[in-house]
Length: 69
Image (cartoon, rainbow, N blue to C red; front, side):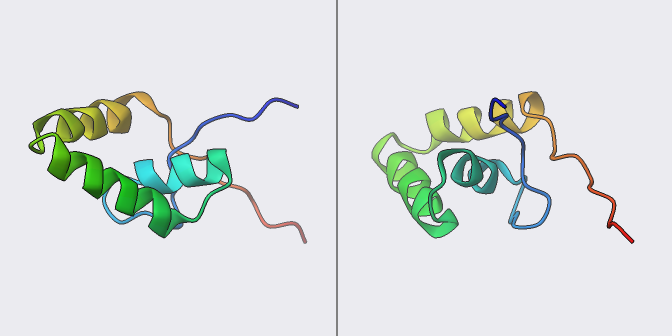
């Protein structure tokens, strides 16, 4: 089964993009957020802010899983 990229609904801080990327690449969420902030600071914030906003609009939220009884 192929992995699919979703925005996280459980571990989100803003839109869940970094948490979704962390789940997809099987990385720690804090590490992905630190990398994102570091890249944003190195590129004068604007490119990474645009990337985040576009990713937030394009990547679908994770499907809600119903608890099994």
